Length: 409
Image 1 (cartoon, rainbow, N blue to C red):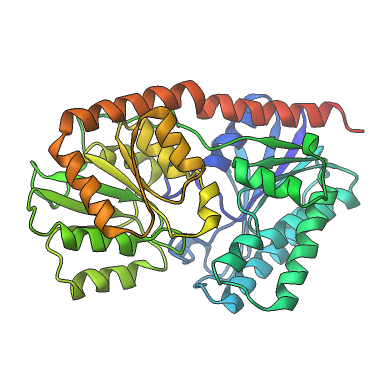
Image 2 (tube, helix red, strand yellow):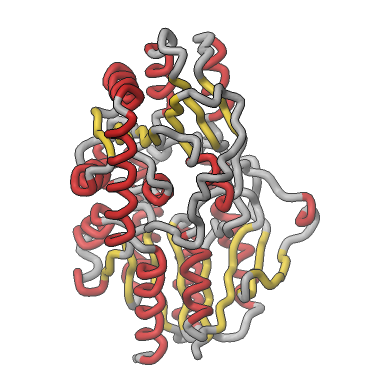
């Protein structure tokens, strides 16, 4: 048995909204017999708020699902602006360091990026304690922030690049979330390809839809629902969805339902009001375990992205939620990993990004051919179970940690 420290600013369990990749991997490590400690922030990432039970506290210890979880302070209320983001990242890095210094020496330290500052702190801690270090990269930062226009200051970019390369050099091994991320890491020239392993997101068989208990939604029972479940944030082009809904207002049997929260949600709600859209419903974020009940009401699930080369490498967690629920998907994204998955699995349709006319036409097509839509949804689930079983992927992650723990040199 090895002592494993897992550092991630964002750690979501099945009872909370958001992706549960870290939770699943840590549980797999615990099932493999490892003693796992998680250091994370207690700020609710989707809402940028501090839960009542943590207010006035800086470090809180608890036991959850057989894991020791240490939750620390980071500044809440952050948005798209650089200053508030750096404050959030920096304060978590500081308090995670304080928390890590209070813990005994680990055999393996794992850090997940973003956030990059906390990953760099974990890398430094691993070096100081002569501990093996595994880096998980879920986003090519700062590249993605630069392309999205979130960071433009050359000094900030240069500092982030040095931090990124420091983490790469210090890592005994790196796990990449997508093929695009793996190519970016290898292309940096800092680490050889044999030190980078691809472990994607996958289908959670622990969370399966129960069609007999679908969620109750404020829409007609016989409506065809095009649904989005996830963060209403920077990456998703939900304005395109509202544009498509505007074009579908003369089709009363079709409804658009958006489930989730995020910094863009208030503006999206206002946009729907300004357009006077009668066919759009917003639902507050729901815990991961409740997502299947909502997806059970969907006739089509939406994956809208901005028209940026960055998103050719996107393979989001929500696509696996959709596939697990046997729902067809509509990918409005640049040609890349997501569109290739849709083609290979025959699980839906792809349209150009930020094209509300094409999206509206695809939604209407799915509504008019329900048997075809259902068949695509079933094909997608079968394909995902064969190729993206989260338990198998988490097992691969645990095996990699096992190897690092038993070969400390």
